[in-house]
Length: 153
Image 1 (cartoon, rainbow, N blue to C red):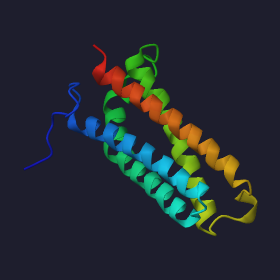
Image 2: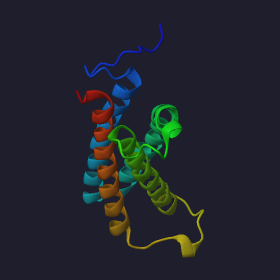
Image 3: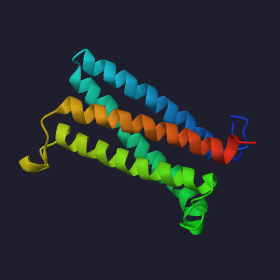
């Protein structure tokens, strides 16, 4: 018994796209829960929660988002960015690269000693709040991409 090809959200999207959307919404909730942990000064649990979301997102990027972008967007790039079908995932991808990269940087600074001192930051709240806003904008643009590709009539 393999992975179903038909989605489960009733939009005509493939299973992988529906699963990705559901996982992204779940991860957004986990980020909020991680923020609550930080406010309650449970910093270790906060770090585990946020880093887990970051790494799960890498899995979703590698297995769902990158393959569909490579197959559906890149062959037409850059000549068709005036059409939302191509512009939405392109913008989402750019935002996602920045958000994931910043998240990885924050995780490296917070959880390791791998980076030299001059590459580290001190103002944790500013960096993490910036990442949270960027992540939410990226999630919204991903939902917009899902809508443009699958739900728009």
